[in-house]
Image (cartoon, rainbow, N blue to C red):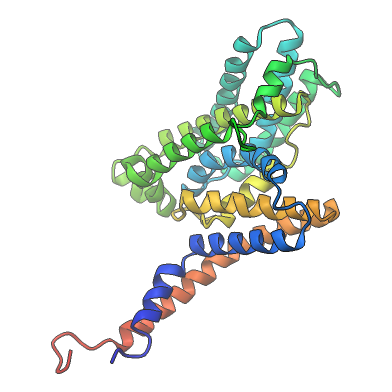
Length: 342
């Protein structure tokens, strides 16, 4: 007979008692409950709009996951999105063709990310302080570029194609490149030496340096990639709403960080998975959109996001404590190797 604390129940807890699985289970419960209680939630039209809302957050969450795993953060991503949108609109107004403007905007995002990376990786400044500063700086520059104007005369072919669904479905086609990018980031993070280096950096920067990992250079390029991806999200945002404005994406950084932490990435670095983050994005946006569909006030939605952010910081630690306690209990009651009856 298996000792108490061992056997099938304990093995099931060890397999299922991870934060990633808990987030997926909660997501499933939210979908089931909302389908039963919120009118229109289960409609294909609702899910089409939900996926469009998810795209910019999920897109920025991909590189943000890698940054947070290293123990850093980037709070300027929404401002990069807004500045990219403003520059896109201004360049279009001056007469440049969109096929030229779009790569220039993505390049601008990479440069903005490089500025963050220079201060953080090059000068060793705290990422929280630097990106709070650039959050304000980049948003201010967006207003310098475009002011309070809105550029909304983009070609219908571009704006319409940005939200077009796959043939015979209500699934936006932009979900496909997002999925490919997610697979790419996931492979890099979980199956390459680069990803192992990111986890090592998050656990101990100095130890990672002594192991031969180029910590500063890696962090610099992470911020460059994050800036470029945030600018790409700005392009999508502008085309989807057919409007370039300096305030596009305001406050989006809170949703991105909340989704990353809700997905189980440790704010202290060194722990997290991309699958968990994608589940966190889906959970956060599904819950918010369901509440919007139920006519819940916008202030309440902000409270929900803040609450989920707190849960995402506290929850994984509690789950880890429970798993460690279960593991110690199993070790304590396990027979000693070589003892009679072992």
